[in-house]
Image (cartoon, rainbow, N blue to C red; front, side, top):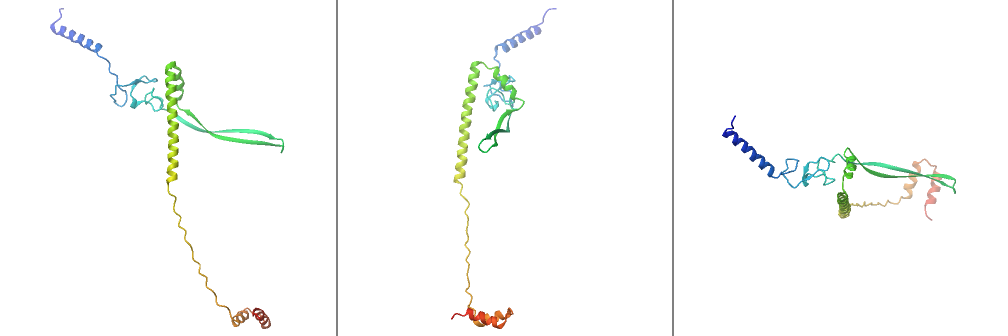
Length: 204
């Protein structure tokens, strides 16, 4: 059956479309959050393109969704030392404890596999990257410590108000001889004892 003009036009348009598709460059954009950034890199774990805004917090070679299930664990490490004191003839037991930090999480085993796939140049680049990141973290940590100490040092201490109590002493009037006698009589003492006590109190 002979081809019509419409068939010829359809074949021609398909050839043109195929030619344009093959000759046009493939534009790769970031695969996260409908981002249109074209300056991307391939994730070393999932091979998806990502931009700098969607890179992993721990490594720029991974996208934000890979190597995310990672955590720092804290534990106590205790060591026991035993030593015999010959002078006192006793066993001395000393215990030392410290805090131990280690990495854990489902993505942690991937790091070993990822390092094994690196070439010598890539391994050197990654090592330098993390070395300088560690130096920046140490510097920032010391800066923050100094800033906290400065704020504590410049914080004014609370003012303590000390109130003084004034004690007023009232001088009592001197008892007369009659007052002393009456007070002793109220106590039920014999009169001769009262006379002796009064005579002893009166100055010569």
